[in-house]
Amino acid sequence: MVVTATVAILAILILPALARSDDHGARMVCMNNLRQMGTASGMYAADNRDYLPYPNWDGGANGSPPGWLYTVTSGAIPNPVDSAPWKANPITAWRTGTWFQYVQNTKAYLCPVDVESKTYTTATASGGRAEKLSTYVMNGASVGYANTGMGYGTPCKITDVWSPACYLLWEPDENVTGQGNPGAFEYNDGANAPSSPEGIGRLHSANSGNLLCIGGNVQFVTVQTFRQQSTVYPGAGPNGKTLAWWSPISSNGH
Image (cartoon, rainbow, N blue to C red; front, side):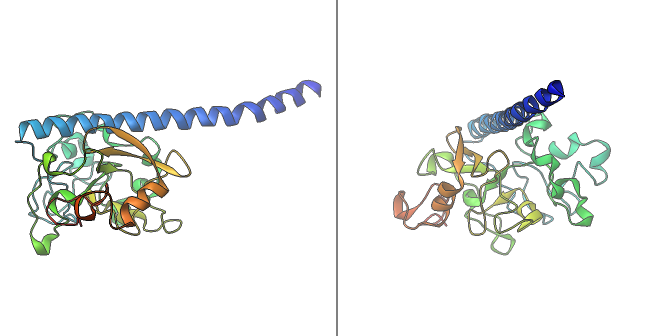
């Protein structure tokens, strides 16, 4: 009985530490993924006269330009998880993206915690995500958040962005307004706007998430900081721009 009690006490003490270790490890994998994305961003810009890629601000619309993550093909976002023909040869889905030549390790696009999310494991046809190529979404600021009705826009140059600390990629929060809300809609394509109810994903912490900045550095940003940069106006940048709302195409970054 003494031995059993001792083992039970040790388990109570050790298991939380092991859980924290696993969380820390997943967080490090995720941050390393974003570092690879930062390298891809710099290399792409160097090869394309300093321009950022099209952010896949397309809603999966046919005829939209090739983006950082994918090219809409046959009227659909390439889906390597549960849709033909990509499921049979998943890497062909990532190959349609303009960053693939710089990051060819498909695991680098996905957080190891995120791939266990219900919206990721649920088939797209049954309400799962339309975009399952990446955990991370790109800020649509580079094209001024131009939707299909306005035209797709031309991506800006990195050097046009007011600060290298501006947010480029982040993990969105599928549960920012409650469990399951807005859910899979956060991944209707490869881009997002930092507007309400957008949030920073809390996959590795109760109050923080990972993001990549224009300058290529990775930050672990609190929910409060992300919300502040998304909602406070004016910000610290020219004409009130913030680290989240930085589009050079409009005067105030929106």
